[in-house]
Image (cartoon, rainbow, N blue to C red; front, side):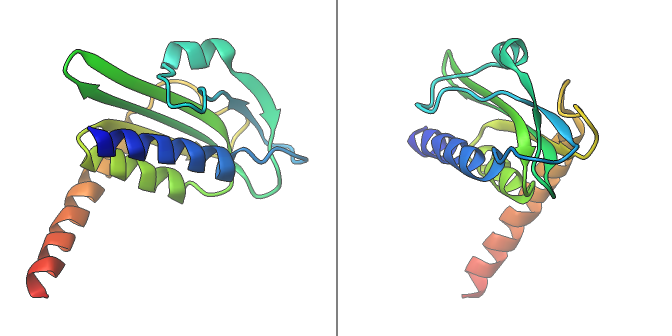
Length: 143
């Protein structure tokens, strides 16, 4: 559970640093993010607090949601904003899934497209995580 919390906090920092570049471009996205101290930030609060922002050049709209369960406790976090590269969100989701959590993300390039429930990326992430784990295991056995 400790490593899961560390990954969760690390993602939050990466998401804030890499994703929240907001300047002049015509693409508009929703923005909401939880507290930087790692406290849960559920989807309902994100939806209530989201604002519209204008993205910088070469950005897309991004959305990220994870849930990590430990006994009766559930750590939930949702973030939405302009993102410069969806790759880092994908890596963070893979880490959450490998640690036993659930994670979805999406990136899109139409105005205000980063809202609603994410379903399609879960299948991709699960398959990608399984393939990554198999390849990693194979490489470890070779050496």
